[in-house]
Amino acid sequence: MKVFINPGHDIKYDSGAVHYDADGNVDLRECDVAAKIGTAVQKYLEAAGCECRLLQSDNLYYDSNYDDRPVAVCDDANDWPADVFVSIHCNAANGQARGTEVECYSRMSNGGNLAQCIQDQIVSALGTVDRGVKEMPGLIVLRHTDMPAVLVETAFIDNDDDAALLTDKWDNFARAIARGVTDYECSLQ
Ligand SMILES: [Zn+2]
Image 1 (cartoon, rainbow, N blue to C red):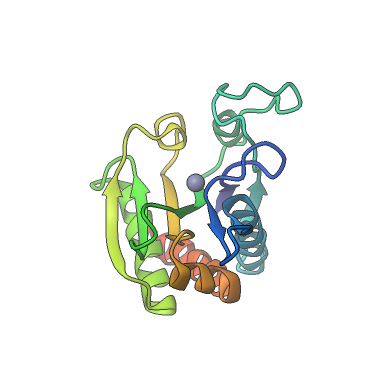
Image 2 (cartoon, rainbow, N blue to C red):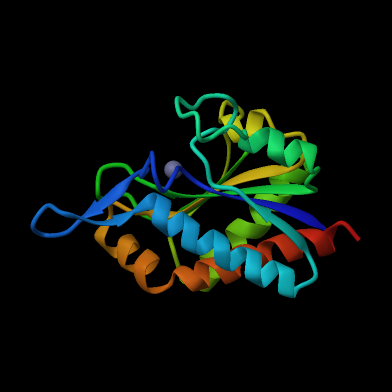
């Protein structure tokens, strides 16, 4: 199976959400967490026999202002073409909200099944609050990709407890996401 991995946001141009330490300094950036987890997901999936392609970019579908981001993530996945698309993010809200959710274009679809496989693996491996699978057809990476696609909101980076999990257990998130993908692959056979 060909798996396209899209760590969210952009190391250079868009940190995404952040966590602040007690002095008000940023001590964790979503783009860095996503990159670390995404790179590890690639490693685990390649070990499981998948072919992977990874791209983290401000240009999701010609929505970037930066000339050094000419390749759009969605087109790169469509042109390859990927069998599944996995975008990796951290959630953020009010500092209190916690937990994991996986977003898909439509629940009653292969993308919905892939989302549920990944959701189940993360919640059981990390013990995060189960916020469930959600339909978010407006998201760029779900709307403009041709294959089953999901956006994984691993945990809330602005919540202290979830941020600690993302810092200490990022590799466990990666393993869980990879297992979710291989669970999905098995469910097709
Ligand atoms: Zn994000």
